[in-house]
Length: 431
Ligand code: 2IP
Ligand code: CA
Image (tube, rainbow, N blue to C red; front, side, top):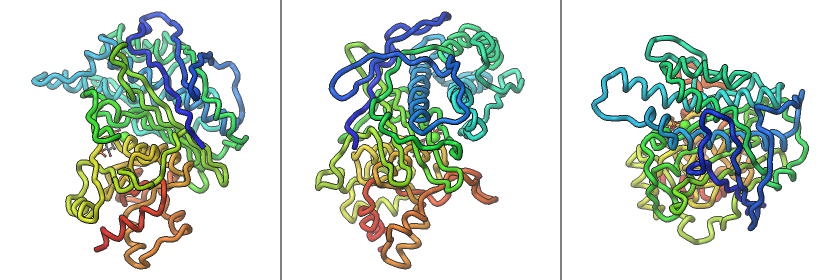
């Protein structure tokens, strides 16, 4: 399944929304041809459903992820916003704090826009959207404000102005982006998702993963097919899980800065989605050759902060270790078949980092398991069966017991598309 990749023409360089609402043209690549369509923005949807189904939910999340990507691109492109984002060395403490606040504001705004979007379209899920950021926001004047999307653009702008130290222009641009209608054509493959119930689902969002690269704004440095750092490592991650089992059942990853068009001087985004529900597995990831003897077969992508001894063991056993930034991007690289696995032996990621890419891997028949538990099991049994792997999948419903951090993936993780890579990795680490 797969082979259809949504490719949107980003709004960068195409005329940004100013202080008035306008419509942008978004093109979606479906197969080999480009089509243009229109879908009403979630914010203007009059139809409120008591419930819904998985296909509608994925469509809504995908559409929202594109809007989130546009906000992320706009913040970098719009001079009024960009000047607030870029850190300048030697600033006084107050300004540094403001830069930090603004960076967080872009994150919080996207997160709260998703909350609003889900509440409008799927009220039954409105209490079940969790995100990395707290919506409580303290501006440089020490005022605590709860950031949210209001019913009208004007109200949202007024609220944002309070956070932005009365920078009305920046607040107006952001509010316009959040309330804008836009043209969007959903991937036709989504209609193949069966009508699955959504009432028992929960959602995790990481509005901007790899925030550091987002702020730095470098074009990207690649090794083979993998981008090691830079804007392409930035992703919007939206994962859907079952509230009873805790397992991921669907996910959307938007890469707002996937490709740079030098002619147009603009970034183009890409979006990926997947659903895994009992025997239903469907996604739009390109079908990549799996462990077929090419370079990706022995490539393992890791964080630059990964344990040095472990890296030495991997390379000594013939694995090619590739460093890349962004937890979401690294796991996406596995889902795209660019490497065999992503390994994180430390508790440096959180549920919001892994929920969406985990769902994509599940949709491909892969998974994302607790590294320490897997290592322990392998050390004892020298084998890991399918049932054991199911048990070891990271779950998204319950916080960790105290004293650990609530939503931390404390045991690290291994992400894979094909589980046959796991014994090969474990064999060299257990030596
Ligand atoms: C971060 C981001 C980092 C990642 C870290 C995440 O999320 O993805 O890149 O570290 O684990 O929590 P590394 O790149 O070393 O894997 P955020 O940018 O949202 O804080
Ligand atoms: Ca993150």
